[in-house]
Length: 158
Image (tube, rainbow, N blue to C red; front, side, top):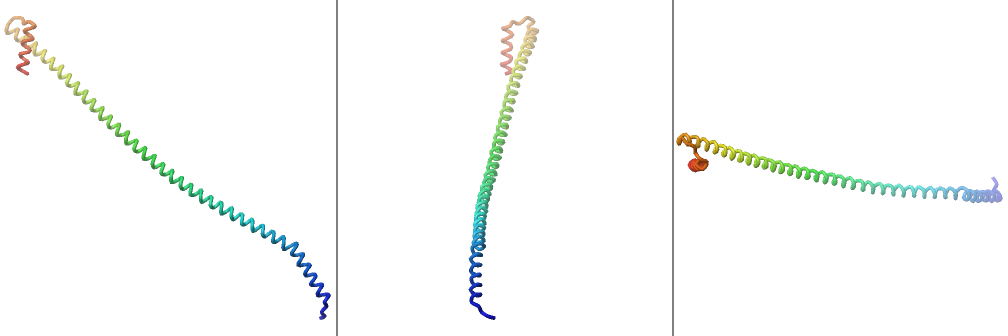
């Protein structure tokens, strides 16, 4: 095997040209492509992180809204329960007042009927007394006599 310097220089020169050509046409475009791809993945990762942060913020907001809605619903239910209790108390008071009014009216009516019956009883008693007195005296008793007899009778009974 002979060593020829020209072959060596020729191979070295071919290797150098191949290196320059590969670097220019293959390495730089592939490096540029890889850098762009890496930048794209970094942007996508940032977008995913931003989306995750936004989703977490929305989730927190949703949970807060749900908690507030639950508290509002409980508050409304409590207010309605209190309003129903107040209404029931008002109805009970009105019913009690109506019952007292009915009782008072009934007592007044009973007193009025009693007065009427007492008046009627007085009249009947007076007529009976006049009839008895008229038979005893066998004469007609005047209205003034009649009134005096009635008053004396009720003073005695009275």
